[in-house]
Length: 368
Length: 67
Image (tube, rainbow over all chains, first blue to last red; front, side, top):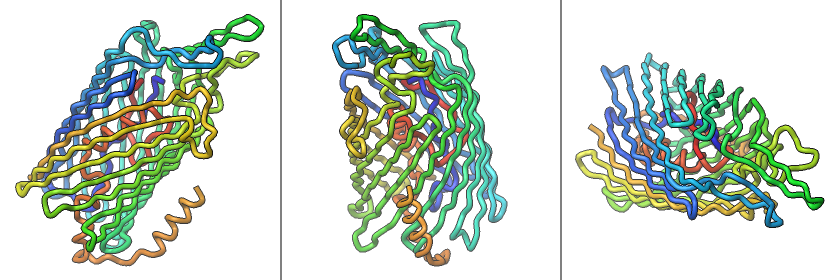
């Protein structure tokens, strides 16, 4: 699916306590079995100026190669997805900046994001405000953002369709004890415009001998709600920290999704830590998802399995080395498996083709 | 979702007032919600490119035509 993803921009307050200045470099390598490969180098920095200003920014290039599912056909009796004949070779450049001004117990921030690739352009801005109460035991967060995207196609040079999204954010960060905190945020978004995937099709052969062809066609609007709650608790005696994140998602395409990630970061002395984690994801299918074209043929239909019902498990391991001069190097290895039988309740979409992928991330950053 | 609301309510009901001098543990890197923005961005995109759900903690991030 050529989907507009709500990519995260750095959010305040994201840290319990911030270093004054940091710069970092991250390199992601991602490989799917039989499908695509992604490399993404990214640089980021954040700093404090004159005690009351904070500036954050990042720039990245996504290099995508390989194959992508294009067609779902039941020519063999059951619907299966087939990948693109030609290899993908796509490069996306993106950058963002955020400026925050502290005003006593309040802060105001403005951000901007640009993303450009051969068949998709995105421009977005956002405003966020925070208010601290009770000596910063409680922080309220509110945000507003808009995106203006253009959807194009390397197959169809005439396609240049808009997609507009407005987002609202509200949340709270609460210190619970001297060793634990929780943040809970809700984001609503309203989107209008072009959501079809111009590269995807469905072919269905009927028992009577006819066949039907449908291009991926989706509603011209999408309203979503994401509710993310993050919990952190340090156990001093065990020299470790529990990190747990849960997200509930729903949209007006009929999709409901739950994400739960739990990690334990274990210190090894002052300089090392190891962080095993496990992420579980489950989603229901979109109302218009179908791997075959029903009769009569509906006006809205997509066989993109990312809109189907499935679940996913992703274990990962991160190792971090901290140096006395403020340098931090960390490496993460992870595995992703999305499958029909991992759907909560077990009744995933029949045509879902299991996705297996592995990734590695190397990050280096320094505070000064 | 009801379980999530109940869990959050129980968590908030158990909170105490944490004085500034008691926040040594809260200042640890592993207590930060986003200790390494580069890694968190890379991971968010890794998962959201293959799932229908996205977002939750920020606004104004724009989109991409991710396959």
